Length: 191
Length: 100
Image (cartoon, rainbow over all chains, first blue to last red; front, side):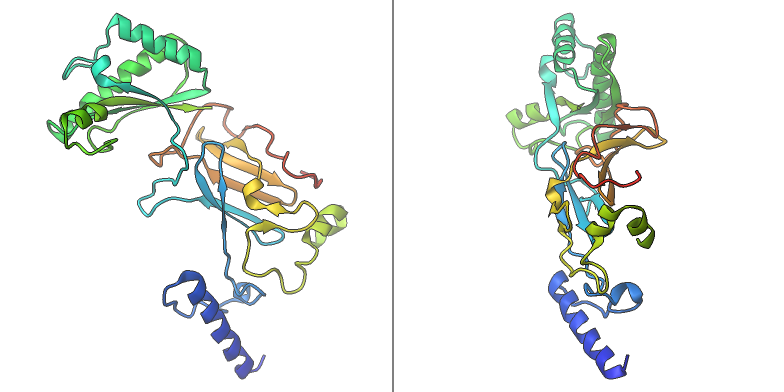
């Protein structure tokens, strides 16, 4: 291929790249054979939504298929619906600073796990923003473990137990009502 | 792909049209006889050797694999099947027959 044609192709490829990325692109054109086809190495993806409701980038270039999770730049999956199937308000199950559950609370939880019938469960504990981060991490983990213990007793499979402390608030901690909402144990049901 | 064409004619048909200079940059459709928008793909679960779930799709001659993540970005390790095993009809989305 002559230098003139090659330069023209490079110019077209650069324009295509710039249009696709909408940022000033470096000349990522035709470095190898893989950028010399009809697509100039530009792979425009679409979205596939998995049965949990989370998005993945997907592409089919004719003979191969490609897929990878769509995450934010913070690594959090982009999902169209929450996969939380149970939120236990902590105030109904735990006394302040405590992680033991009353007999009545245990019965309610046992009934939840027995009637839900998922493949497995991920239990995550959360607190409001009062007290130290380290204290809240410990308290939320202890509370999540108490819930997981009840699940275990009724034969539910637990995939993971975590304490996120005050780091994953459901709402801003700017009122008494909101802080109560943040004091919670979330149960993710894997189906 | 030459081997695939020799073994199965349907696989060859799926590839047809892409021979030569390939397809344009729009990779959002499956072309060929099982053509569809890629949002229509049908997945199952493949469990990795660590016991964690991945979405698996065998769509004729294309294969897809992508991590199953919970809303915090952590791998989902549900125990739905033993490590290296699969669950669900992950080959059900395409009528194209291939050796696997």
